[in-house]
Image 1 (cartoon, rainbow, N blue to C red):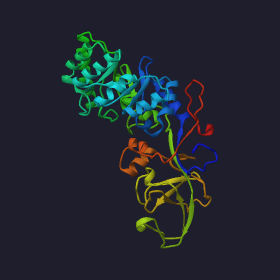
Image 2 (image 1 turned 120 degrees about the horizontal axis):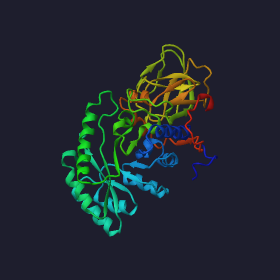
Image 3 (image 1 turned 30 degrees about the horizontal axis):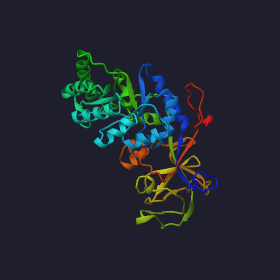
Image 4 (image 1 turned 90 degrees about the horizontal axis):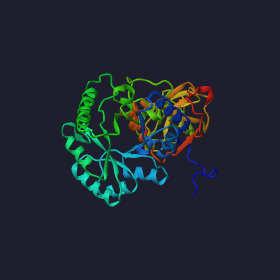
Length: 394
């Protein structure tokens, strides 16, 4: 069945991905970086819900060096789509994944001796010299080899003729807060490793530490490459990190009014009867719910309709939520409602949604489910200059 056919009646609820904004964000980020610093675009988890292939293609056009991913499946999806640029798999690999990585020219992090030996054997069997990156654990206590135990592993990699020590990296636990004490400590530990490599005349092509917060607030740590994720998509990682003028959110979530009900005083709304009308009310039902990733809240949040805020009432259902449109008398059936994004002069941000969910923006972006179809707009190539869209231009 062709779901892209204009004859197929698509569900009136969707995520909208503005590829023009994505392109503009990439240009602003690239312009902000020194020319020698490479940009690794992080597109794991379907590019934080934005569509990894679309994001990758535009990022390449705008000068990205390669892409950061989390799983073998994510990397193979890009390879199968014809992306030939470097794909860096973050985290750890099972031994069974190593042949796939070698065969398909995937770059992986190797952080312990056994993985180094196995990868070297497989690379040699394929007649390849495989580039690898080593993650230095500098305090986050997640993946990687401890900074004070890293040198033997690095020397082991250098000794393997079928491996190339291409990158040495670390990851900041808290780079986007005002207090940079721990980030600076991590960077100091990382530099200890770099110093040890310099003393032994071991070259490293790509030294990289910065996520989006580090890119914004730690210019001394940019080094050879930055790994930018959430900022590509127009979301700043915190409220206190540096701002780049013109960065805009790429994702919106929308639905159309599927029903309108009139309430009399005392009538209730939704499961659990969590809302009772105190006067005559007019409500709109939107065909989107917690089954699509909307937070399961009661009488909190809302939507934008005709450029005005319509408060959510009652308890949200799996496939529906209700908003009060009494003060929006012009609202009609099948009007567009914005669940997350901008309409007119009003905006519901991803951070607003995160507060409803008692979580973070990353969680909100990645948890809109696939049954909520993804619609890309403004995907055509634009002139090669940084332009900040205005409301009039949209």
